[in-house]
Length: 379
Image (cartoon, rainbow, N blue to C red; front, side, top):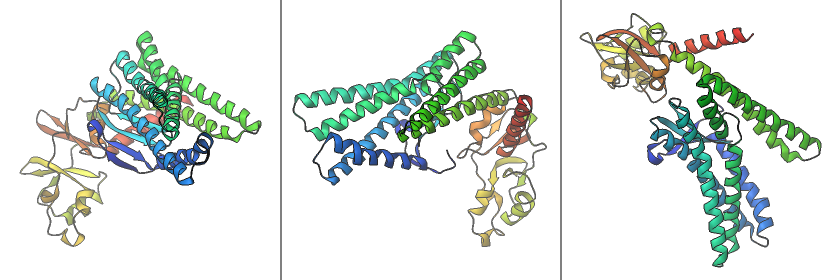
């Protein structure tokens, strides 16, 4: 996201959790605001060290609540049969990345509502904790962070329930429109336009606030711009995915499939295939049978001075269980296999015969063609 690297920090419930580098910016901004403004006003006469410690701990607790918000989405999605590839925290919050769309409006509704429901639950728990703490005489340095966490999680839930795609409220709106129209593309278009309208309204409010001398409204303009751009992008992404679902892998596969004999040296495969060919990976065959896949990463993992004596069969990946598809499978259905960490290529097998191969570059070319046709139609 934003072209920055993400750091994987864990796998809660088996779901990869990543932190985008942009998240560090907002984390330090929240911690600094709490340290220099919020806590000094709410807890006067404390030491700078105490403010800094409270600011850091409270900021971490807030981002922990963001993780719970996103995990609520992911767990409900997984319960509905969807695969969750990862959860990523970034500068404006978090996102659960799914490998497919919900199969029904009801599942979309439940998945979208789960996040705000979790934020409201956290807000209520913190509010109740603050009340209980006050009754038993807990110190203010415990009660004030609980009040803050209650307020910020409530605000998070309310903001996410705004009826604009891709916010949670926009997904709820899409689920309702989908149920009414029985057309997910039309529902996505209307929900996306609502998201763009809300983003534009936030920018207008921000401009009005800045003109009145309140420069804190600049952040509202950034959020409005970001939301409007995401809404437009989400609709384009949906349309592209629908189009990919209509195209079979047989129509974009490279055929006849170019294969690499297992006995070839890495020196030979580097010059004859990776430098001379168009694909970043190839099937490896031995005695007429496909035994694995070879890509440039496998080659470069071997020291350069050993390329001449190392064969392709020695370093090829032998994991093929997720790398085979029927010629009639849709391009959309094989996308997860082409993501980083997957096989990276799909072997198209027809009645036991290797009919062709599909790689990321083939899909990228198809997406570029779809985008060009869409832009020409719009123009």
